[in-house]
Length: 253
Image 1: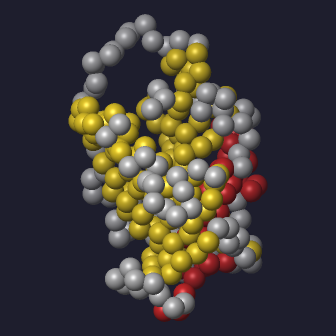
Image 2 (image 1 turned 120 degrees about the horizontal axis):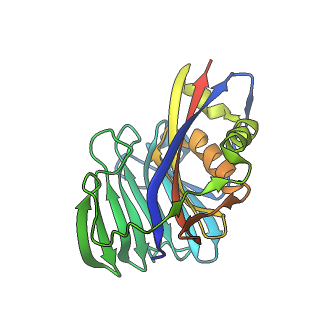
């Protein structure tokens, strides 16, 4: 697993949404519908859950499972179109759409840092670290990890190339309200998305820490995946991987 800076930069954006500003949600990938017992359903009208399968590349297939009229249930990633080789990001969510746990799988085996969340928090409580399926250590995020502490390390966080204001403008100018979201009624709907900024400033490994419903989530995934380059984070002047967390609140009037 590549070295990452796990310090999280979190800020919020409120998108004011009016019913007249809507469009039909793109239907990328394949969709499958399920009954309450997860057996195949005959139609969307008949289902309790559905799954969207998206081909990211010849070796990456992302599957996002949703309540028919509610938040995400889980996210899985596979190496093959038959969904037989788990490989990539896996996430599980509670009934409110808040993340319960997540981590990476490398050809069936847990690898790297797996985060676990308590209650309604969208910040991890503790993590368990694995190397190729083997347990390495468990630690709380409330306890400072001094094992490899180096007072001489200088860390510079990743930044959007047009600054924080430019990032907010990008989101405000590109996020559009999905038609489907308005069926939830008037109110405020928070989505929390986490993504990786790599050593070249590219965005990857997106997943949610708070889901609302499929169309609102899908719109945010789409916009952030298409984002311009960031300035990568650095450690002692050298580029490193960096985790970014972004709150986006839709206000439906």
